[in-house]
View 1: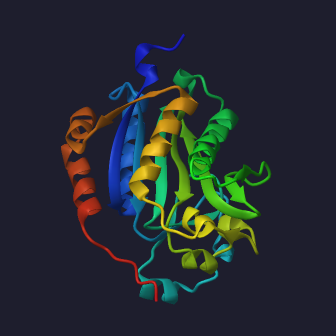
View 2: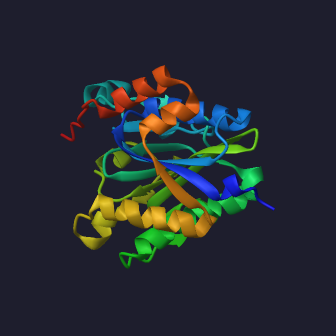
Length: 253
């Protein structure tokens, strides 16, 4: 039997932010969940400034652009503890970072990963996009092109990192890598599939609705002040929020 708190998931709906700042916040929340400082599950919803991340299996061989080129573009390359290989995050891509105690929630890892895929599948289905799973390569796909990615890490039963859905991002940076370590794999977006830009706020709301229905959680939307209070770590979270609100554009030329 799940405790009442296990059915509530705190939702911090954020905007465009630096990857390292969001990663630091995730790690702080993971520690707070592991130690019982925060009793509820948490999900962060956001977009990132341009960044390439390398999962546990990743090597630099799947990065086709030179370091000098990426420095000119001001796009960092950051190794992280999630599963998977190399991927790109940028504006126009919707990212969910659920921080969930899988034991409390009663989820097996494989079922949790399938749940993240299901959220993305239901979301794009609302726009009549016929995406599918590929059990050999996790995520969601349309006609052999990747539309959404999944990559998680689990520490002492608490899962973090999550899933990323391509809504309206620039797809050019995906050409500078072998996405997910797969040479020749194409990447698509909701915008590309429908030949029109999709309102991000509508996709966010749809994805949050499906997050609740797939995982049987009730989302409790909170702001950064509430998160400050819960973490009892005002300095770290204030630094995070300051970085998230500063500007840092993407040179797509």
